[in-house]
Amino acid sequence: MLRDAAAGGRSVSIGREGGDVVLSTVGLDRVLEHEAGDLTCTVEAGIRLSQLRAALEPHGQMVALDPPGDPTIGACIAANLSGPSRHRYGTARDLVIGVTVVLADGTIASSGGKVVKNVAGFDLGKLFCGSEGRLGLVGRVALRLHPLPEATATVVGPPSAAGALAVLHSTLVPSALDVHLPDRVAVLFEGSPGAVAAQVRRARVLVDGEEAGDEVWHDAAERQLAARGRLLFAPGRLGELLAGRAEGVVRVAAGFAYVPEPVDDPRDPAAIVLAKQIREQFDPQGVLV
Image 1 (tube, rainbow, N blue to C red):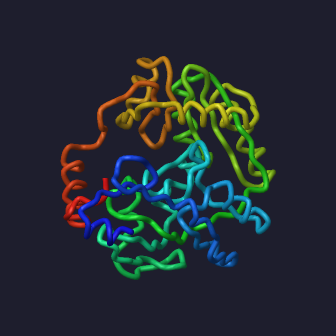
Image 2 (cartoon, rainbow, N blue to C red; image 1 turned 90 degrees about the vertical axis):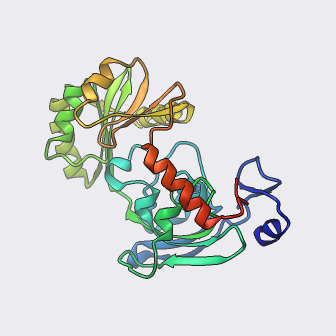
Image 3 (tube, helix red, strand yellow; image 1 turned 30 degrees about the vertical axis):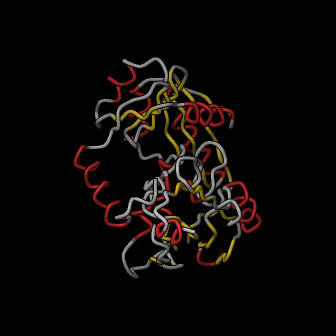
């Protein structure tokens, strides 16, 4: 379809309206391989996170992505989506170890492999993360997995920069550290029951808080999904950001906040120019929109 569209001068959009041809990966929803011993799997890009979680859970494993909603793996890559556990596990960019993509002219290209330590070829997987469907269609993905934690617990406290930074600069190892304005600092711990309990005790002192349930993270996901902008802040400016905002989901270590209002593109102007130049190299005819 991409080859024919390019030859016919038609535009193509992937997973959204906008092109003369609209492509969907909804039918590409299989788990192709799962190497439980290597903590890796290969899936088609149309599989939804809920489907993949259900397939991995009986093996005691997970894909450590928790963006709001139930996006496909392809959407996670195209938008480099992430959720609170980005603090510990990173984004889709950090979990992709191989991809097969279809370029705008119909060329099929593969990069990476099926093992975590891989140096085979150019790293198209990382390049395609955040590409917004403008470099090509992601067909299949090899992913790094993690063991399911034995126990989880959440600690919440007042929404202060001091509490959040105390946790960030401590020896604690949280899986998530957010400030949910105007309500709370929220800290997630995962691991063995003993280790989680010990960290919870210490975190309660640091944030002057108490334990809470999973509803804290469900609420954060709804706020992130409803956000219309993403605001960057420099290291050391957390207190200033919190003092100047009434609402937002602040990813403390990542240095950004999901906010209710639209904001200008936070990228450096040079990065915007570079992205345009890369798109022109991958899609000189401007097929993908």
